[in-house]
Length: 246
Image (cartoon, rainbow, N blue to C red; front, side, top):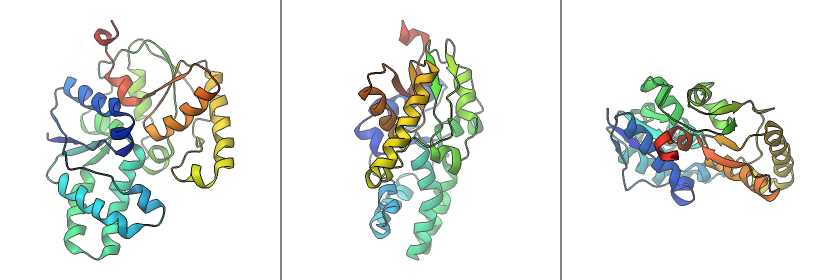
């Protein structure tokens, strides 16, 4: 199987350890991962703020860079949703039949990490070891748009040494929402305060999610209150091993 990694802007810029964790994890499972170096942004920021024509070069770039792969893994629910659902919308609006065909070929091969592991590779126990108390936040796009369900939790439950605790009001939004946090800061901060309180009630050492944008938002709130609670992307926990912890 030819697997390619689309690392996303935020991971490439701020959280490169997440992309490395995805590669390390998949290689441990016996797969080779390609990284098309010409990849750029998926265009989600442009699309969400009404700059649809400006997003078109990124749609074209993605379709060209990731053509021919059996699977394209994205460690982000929001970017996965953008590519899999809204690239087709943009291609259709642009009226380019060749682009519509290219997007239609690539989009079905795009998977969020937990989807790839559970649905495509057929594994839940990836041989991970993470001896910490962890709580999991299902991000909005993965929960409501991709409907990944319990896949991330099934993967976490199979991690050796983990103490996985339920997060109260887990399905409520953390208040980030990309530009929502910028346009509606008061509402966003109120939602964040509720989420941070919920995390604190679990006694968790680590908050896990599958989108670093949400982890950045919640992690900032946790850090400002000096809670001592850390954040880890799902890929980083799944890539952890007993040898690495020694």
